[in-house]
Length: 161
Image 1 (cartoon, one colour):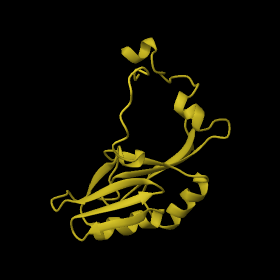
Image 2 (image 1 turned 90 degrees about the vertical axis):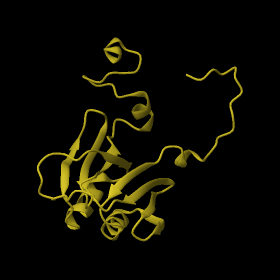
Image 3 (image 1 turned 30 degrees about the vertical axis):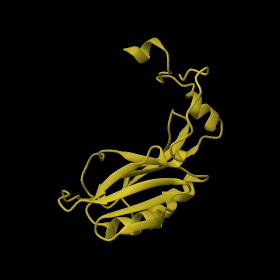
């Protein structure tokens, strides 16, 4: 925790630019339409090299890598990671993704970490997780940590093991 007696420095960059995920894609010409169809804005791009897409004020970098391994949408198992986006109506977003024919990595369901969510795969197998808070929870409980069995909260004995 930061020492409140020390004077803090001014923020170097806006909060939405402090932590940005960059993912590698095989073709921007496939990835940009995918992300745009999910609701991302294409902020700018350099054809064949790089794109910045955004969801509200949060950005995601797409870097084209010509030597990306070929992804097969029918491949069993989970991708290397995913990015989570909170939406008002995850059930509606799930139906939209199904209508678009996207590969669902994790089906829509309620999770013990107080979110109802699902994951779809982008053209290169990276996951995009959409979620909504469960009715009995909200952003405050998510920030503090859910009160559910099997969840380790910061500062507990189980955290240090």
